Length: 532
Image 1 (tube, rainbow, N blue to C red):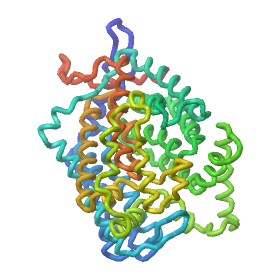
Image 2 (image 1 turned 180 degrees about the horizontal axis):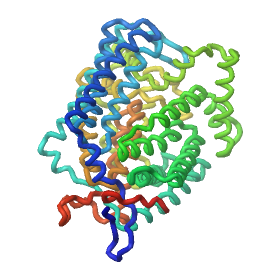
Image 3 (image 1 turned 120 degrees about the vertical axis):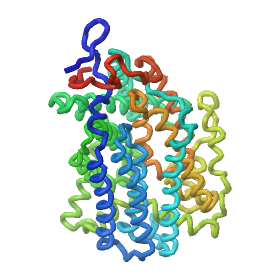
């Protein structure tokens, strides 16, 4: 059994990932590849059969075929990742799955309508069919852009940010990130830290993101050495629960679910085992809280009294519990299981919004001609350099008003925005050509980010990559500039914070004297040190 030691002879701090174990477990034999592609075919077939039988409204065959094709497209990158034996984090692959969830499932689970100012408006099936076909074209363009950039010789010139941790640097970073990140998060929840819109908003976001990076590093430590110890598991999931509750108190379900998402993805990456039970628990938690999100915000955000952290979390549980009780005893109007399913999954419905925008543009709302992307020209300038820089969300709110999703006073006074979504926004600007071009550009940008941070020997860089791209799983419901204007800035800022704890910017590709690459992880048989 090999061990890892420092120059002084002391055991080194637990490295990030047991890449040797990953290579042994990930490189798929031909039989394994057959199982992967067989499982892929079975998954698509089950999707087709299940939603042939289960539909909120009868779906025309043309739309149904497009839905099955979208499922096949969105699952393909994940199957390819597994079959090829890749040892990188599968974030692009999961983003593709997210497109299936937010555009494919609503075709069957939601009625053929869109909510306009809290009022359901019926949509013609022709508009929905057109939106489904455009989604298929858009996702295919994104996948093509991703793999095309990776295949080009230019991809070898993308700078790498592996940030391998120095001995003891990982433990020091964990102490720093947890102390600073938790402190800023608590101050932010209590209203004492600057909000996202202020000049220091970007700094606050970067500091709070260190918690997610720390959770990723801890999860990889816990699961890198094989069967995790009970104390390590309690520490990891206890800390994740605390961070999740703090996120819940902010009123944003995304902030509550993101800590669990990064931990589960990191666990899957290292152990190659999907934590299905925890995923089911997370889905149930989403279904438990999401139906009362509007009631919660009306009481906590727009109420007359200031609500503390503990009270805001309590209100979440009270409202959600009352909602479930009303469904059980029948006191809640429209509280049957079908209505509950539609209400729960309505948050994931981007398809009917896309169909609505397609119907309105250019018949009612003329094409924007790229004006909503103007922030791309100025977004790279830090706000501390240009304090009065226009907000990235201004065009987003203007589109909400133009498409009657919000009233003027709601967008102007409350700052609330709905988020048109990447696909509808691309259509609203340039029509079908915009869908293809914007989605292909998105795939290329995600490929560049993957090449930069998600290399086979990446440590701190891989943690940054996961912490940033996890927002894309839900971020496809917002506009393009909101996702990509601050992306490079966030990469640089997070890398600068991790750099003092890393040995170098790029990990060495040279194998040691023994001929086997040590990798950014535990040597074979080494135990993970999860102490802080």
